[in-house]
Image (cartoon, rainbow, N blue to C red; front, top):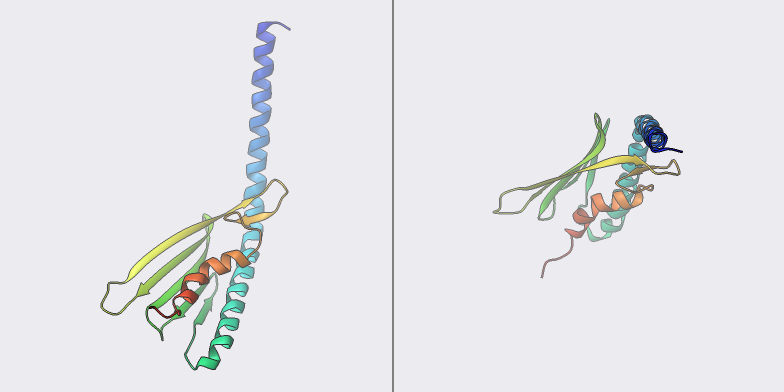
Length: 156
């Protein structure tokens, strides 16, 4: 094989690799668009389950816990009774397909503190849908609720 033939083969190989990459990107985008809403619903259900468990365990103390407000494509977790007051909203977005987490903390005599995080969906080489690298909703629900639940701990 001569130099020119070798160059042509390298170009053809690069084009084939690029085509394969484009096909994967299209496949991934289609899977995400189709499966992400159900994944988000599983996440919302897991958050609700954890909140219900937390509130049931807190019931014995007589101190109000956390409430959830659910609407299509979002869930808000609100802690008002104990300081600091806190809210977390988890929202599904279709364009781009992602999940946004918006936090607000308000303590007596201080300015509200806001933060936000955007989580993105992907498809791993085995075809599993992932949100921020997680196939399972439990670690994401724990991430969402961790700061809220920890805020009930007494401050020394």
